[in-house]
Length: 96
Image 1 (spheres, one colour):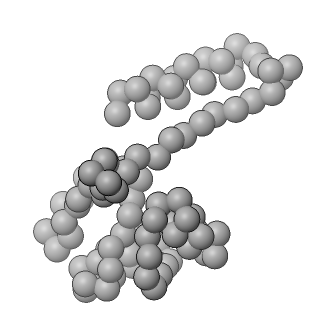
Image 2 (cartoon, rainbow, N blue to C red; image 1 turned 90 degrees about the horizontal axis):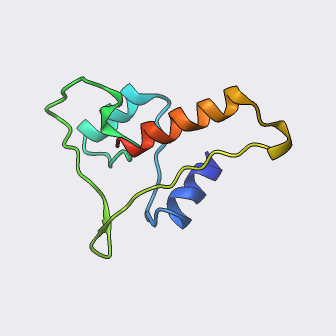
């Protein structure tokens, strides 16, 4: 949890006290109980509509906060499956 806290402070720029939920449902309860907010990578991970939680995009300096993802593998260890997987992964992120 300490590395998560450091990430959210240093990289994402969140300040203040941190409460870490054990799971998604506990996190939703914290948010619904006005105990803070819950940053999530993507709101499409669930189809559940929860009227007690409002989803908002986060902005810094008038620009929406986005996160970059990277995939790496050793050039000497490449094969058709890895390259096909990389192409599928790239397409899935391009569609977002």
